Image 1 (cartoon, rainbow, N blue to C red):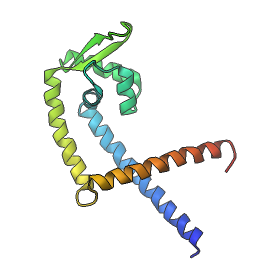
Image 2: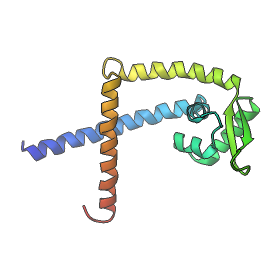
Image 3: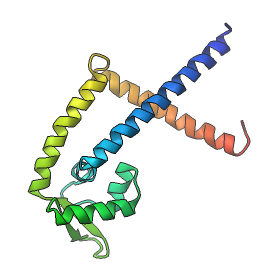
Length: 154
């Protein structure tokens, strides 16, 4: 097999593997969303001043209206408090309550177990960091290729 054909075959295999991984990660993402994913996002994003609904929606890659719906429910369950933004009272910042922090701690243990299951014996922290950098580069090049394809340059 010629070198270009081998590269093409390896690239096809890589893409199908990524499609499979994406499918599995979508299923995991749905489960996390059902297990208080909004609270996890607020916990990760909050730097002491609260978090906007837009920031949570962007982190979870979901529609902001879904975040608004969920945060109102979570507020009635005493998992979070919603306060006017100190910078602009038209916007709301969300903060976790003590009750929510306890739930997030439980979920963190589950997340660690999930990560261990996916990467145990395969990748250490340095290898995963290297892989993430390579995947970020491929993602950047994929966006460029997609743009070129859309304007007819490929």
